[in-house]
Image (cartoon, rainbow, N blue to C red; front, top):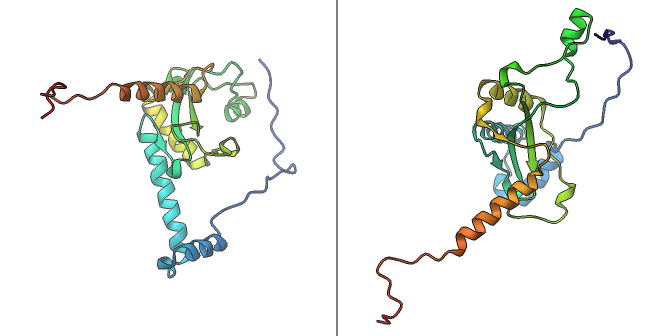
Length: 193
Protein backbone atom coordinates (compact mmCIF):
# COMPACT_ATOMS: atom_id res chain seq x y z
CA UNK A 1 0.00 0.00 0.00
CA UNK A 2 1.12 3.48 -0.84
CA UNK A 3 1.24 6.12 1.90
CA UNK A 4 -0.47 9.44 1.40
CA UNK A 5 0.93 12.79 2.57
CA UNK A 6 -1.42 15.41 3.94
CA UNK A 7 -1.78 18.49 1.74
CA UNK A 8 -0.43 21.90 2.75
CA UNK A 9 -3.62 23.83 3.43
CA UNK A 10 -1.73 27.13 3.60
CA UNK A 11 -0.09 26.75 0.18
CA UNK A 12 -0.89 29.35 -2.52
CA UNK A 13 -3.90 28.55 -4.69
CA UNK A 14 -4.72 29.15 -8.31
CA UNK A 15 -8.24 30.40 -8.82
CA UNK A 16 -9.60 30.49 -12.31
CA UNK A 17 -11.32 33.70 -13.34
CA UNK A 18 -14.97 33.23 -14.02
CA UNK A 19 -17.56 35.33 -15.74
CA UNK A 20 -21.24 35.50 -15.00
CA UNK A 21 -24.16 36.48 -17.18
CA UNK A 22 -26.29 37.44 -14.19
CA UNK A 23 -25.26 41.10 -14.28
CA UNK A 24 -27.03 44.42 -14.42
CA UNK A 25 -25.82 44.80 -18.00
CA UNK A 26 -27.65 41.61 -18.98
CA UNK A 27 -30.78 42.87 -17.23
CA UNK A 28 -30.56 46.17 -19.14
CA UNK A 29 -30.23 44.33 -22.47
CA UNK A 30 -33.21 42.14 -21.52
CA UNK A 31 -35.31 45.21 -20.67
CA UNK A 32 -34.30 46.88 -23.95
CA UNK A 33 -35.43 43.87 -26.00
CA UNK A 34 -38.56 43.30 -23.87
CA UNK A 35 -40.06 46.68 -22.90
CA UNK A 36 -43.05 45.12 -21.11
CA UNK A 37 -40.63 43.97 -18.35
CA UNK A 38 -39.16 47.44 -17.74
CA UNK A 39 -40.18 47.32 -14.04
CA UNK A 40 -38.40 44.01 -13.38
CA UNK A 41 -35.89 44.29 -10.55
CA UNK A 42 -32.45 42.66 -10.58
CA UNK A 43 -33.39 40.41 -7.64
CA UNK A 44 -36.51 39.16 -9.45
CA UNK A 45 -34.55 38.67 -12.70
CA UNK A 46 -31.93 36.62 -10.88
CA UNK A 47 -34.59 34.64 -8.96
CA UNK A 48 -36.43 33.72 -12.18
CA UNK A 49 -33.24 32.40 -13.76
CA UNK A 50 -32.27 30.46 -10.62
CA UNK A 51 -35.71 28.83 -10.31
CA UNK A 52 -35.66 27.90 -14.02
CA UNK A 53 -32.21 26.32 -13.66
CA UNK A 54 -33.33 24.44 -10.54
CA UNK A 55 -36.35 23.02 -12.39
CA UNK A 56 -34.11 22.08 -15.31
CA UNK A 57 -31.80 20.14 -12.97
CA UNK A 58 -34.77 18.37 -11.37
CA UNK A 59 -36.00 17.42 -14.85
CA UNK A 60 -32.61 16.01 -15.83
CA UNK A 61 -32.45 13.92 -12.64
CA UNK A 62 -36.07 12.70 -12.80
CA UNK A 63 -36.24 11.86 -16.51
CA UNK A 64 -34.28 8.88 -17.76
CA UNK A 65 -33.75 10.43 -21.20
CA UNK A 66 -32.69 13.80 -19.80
CA UNK A 67 -33.90 17.21 -20.92
CA UNK A 68 -33.67 19.09 -24.17
CA UNK A 69 -32.34 22.57 -23.48
CA UNK A 70 -34.30 25.60 -24.67
CA UNK A 71 -33.56 27.19 -28.05
CA UNK A 72 -32.38 23.73 -29.27
CA UNK A 73 -29.00 24.14 -27.55
CA UNK A 74 -28.69 20.40 -26.94
CA UNK A 75 -29.61 17.58 -24.59
CA UNK A 76 -28.34 16.88 -21.08
CA UNK A 77 -28.84 13.46 -19.49
CA UNK A 78 -27.38 11.22 -16.82
CA UNK A 79 -25.75 7.96 -17.86
CA UNK A 80 -24.37 4.85 -16.20
CA UNK A 81 -20.81 3.91 -17.13
CA UNK A 82 -18.55 1.00 -16.20
CA UNK A 83 -15.89 1.70 -13.55
CA UNK A 84 -12.83 3.68 -14.57
CA UNK A 85 -9.61 1.83 -15.26
CA UNK A 86 -7.51 4.27 -13.26
CA UNK A 87 -7.69 4.43 -9.46
CA UNK A 88 -10.35 6.67 -7.97
CA UNK A 89 -8.65 7.77 -4.75
CA UNK A 90 -10.78 8.73 -1.73
CA UNK A 91 -8.56 11.45 -0.28
CA UNK A 92 -10.61 11.97 2.88
CA UNK A 93 -10.26 8.33 3.96
CA UNK A 94 -6.67 8.23 2.73
CA UNK A 95 -5.71 11.13 5.01
CA UNK A 96 -7.66 9.62 7.87
CA UNK A 97 -5.87 6.23 7.68
CA UNK A 98 -2.53 7.37 6.24
CA UNK A 99 -2.61 4.92 3.31
CA UNK A 100 -4.16 5.11 -0.14
CA UNK A 101 -7.85 4.21 -0.13
CA UNK A 102 -10.07 4.09 -3.23
CA UNK A 103 -13.75 4.65 -3.85
CA UNK A 104 -15.54 1.38 -4.51
CA UNK A 105 -19.07 2.61 -5.40
CA UNK A 106 -20.75 -0.20 -3.48
CA UNK A 107 -24.10 1.60 -3.71
CA UNK A 108 -24.15 1.36 -7.51
CA UNK A 109 -22.52 -2.02 -8.12
CA UNK A 110 -19.21 -0.31 -9.05
CA UNK A 111 -20.92 1.70 -11.83
CA UNK A 112 -20.22 5.41 -12.31
CA UNK A 113 -22.54 8.32 -12.98
CA UNK A 114 -21.64 10.68 -15.80
CA UNK A 115 -23.45 13.81 -16.89
CA UNK A 116 -23.63 13.91 -20.68
CA UNK A 117 -24.23 16.91 -22.91
CA UNK A 118 -24.58 16.77 -26.66
CA UNK A 119 -25.69 19.33 -29.17
CA UNK A 120 -25.56 16.88 -32.06
CA UNK A 121 -29.31 16.31 -32.00
CA UNK A 122 -32.16 16.67 -34.46
CA UNK A 123 -31.57 20.38 -34.96
CA UNK A 124 -27.93 21.37 -35.31
CA UNK A 125 -26.71 24.93 -35.34
CA UNK A 126 -23.69 26.80 -36.58
CA UNK A 127 -20.51 26.67 -34.44
CA UNK A 128 -21.98 24.00 -32.19
CA UNK A 129 -18.49 22.64 -31.44
CA UNK A 130 -17.77 25.83 -29.46
CA UNK A 131 -20.49 25.05 -26.87
CA UNK A 132 -19.74 23.15 -23.67
CA UNK A 133 -21.77 22.27 -20.61
CA UNK A 134 -20.17 22.42 -17.18
CA UNK A 135 -22.48 21.42 -14.33
CA UNK A 136 -22.29 23.31 -11.05
CA UNK A 137 -21.39 21.58 -7.79
CA UNK A 138 -24.96 21.51 -6.47
CA UNK A 139 -26.17 19.77 -9.65
CA UNK A 140 -23.39 17.19 -9.37
CA UNK A 141 -24.21 16.50 -5.72
CA UNK A 142 -27.97 16.19 -6.32
CA UNK A 143 -27.38 13.91 -9.31
CA UNK A 144 -24.98 11.74 -7.29
CA UNK A 145 -27.49 11.41 -4.45
CA UNK A 146 -30.29 10.43 -6.84
CA UNK A 147 -27.97 8.01 -8.64
CA UNK A 148 -27.05 6.18 -5.45
CA UNK A 149 -30.74 5.66 -4.68
CA UNK A 150 -31.79 4.40 -8.13
CA UNK A 151 -28.80 3.80 -10.42
CA UNK A 152 -30.56 1.20 -12.60
CA UNK A 153 -32.91 3.88 -13.92
CA UNK A 154 -30.34 5.65 -16.10
CA UNK A 155 -29.17 4.79 -19.62
CA UNK A 156 -26.09 2.59 -19.77
CA UNK A 157 -23.44 4.13 -22.03
CA UNK A 158 -20.51 2.20 -23.42
CA UNK A 159 -17.14 3.95 -23.02
CA UNK A 160 -16.34 3.20 -26.68
CA UNK A 161 -19.54 4.71 -28.06
CA UNK A 162 -20.04 8.32 -29.10
CA UNK A 163 -23.12 10.05 -27.75
CA UNK A 164 -23.70 11.69 -31.12
CA UNK A 165 -23.87 8.18 -32.65
CA UNK A 166 -26.66 7.25 -30.24
CA UNK A 167 -28.70 10.25 -31.35
CA UNK A 168 -28.01 9.60 -35.05
CA UNK A 169 -29.33 6.03 -34.71
CA UNK A 170 -32.45 7.34 -32.99
CA UNK A 171 -32.97 9.95 -35.74
CA UNK A 172 -32.67 7.28 -38.43
CA UNK A 173 -35.28 5.12 -36.68
CA UNK A 174 -37.67 8.06 -36.45
CA UNK A 175 -37.05 8.93 -40.11
CA UNK A 176 -37.85 5.36 -41.21
CA UNK A 177 -41.03 5.35 -39.08
CA UNK A 178 -42.21 8.50 -40.85
CA UNK A 179 -41.60 6.98 -44.30
CA UNK A 180 -44.42 4.45 -43.97
CA UNK A 181 -47.65 6.10 -45.18
CA UNK A 182 -50.70 6.22 -42.95
CA UNK A 183 -53.67 4.84 -44.87
CA UNK A 184 -57.09 5.54 -43.35
CA UNK A 185 -59.65 2.75 -42.98
CA UNK A 186 -62.06 2.39 -45.85
CA UNK A 187 -59.67 4.01 -48.32
CA UNK A 188 -60.15 2.81 -51.89
CA UNK A 189 -57.64 4.09 -54.38
CA UNK A 190 -59.89 3.19 -57.34
CA UNK A 191 -62.94 5.02 -56.01
CA UNK A 192 -62.55 8.63 -57.21
CA UNK A 193 -65.87 9.91 -55.79
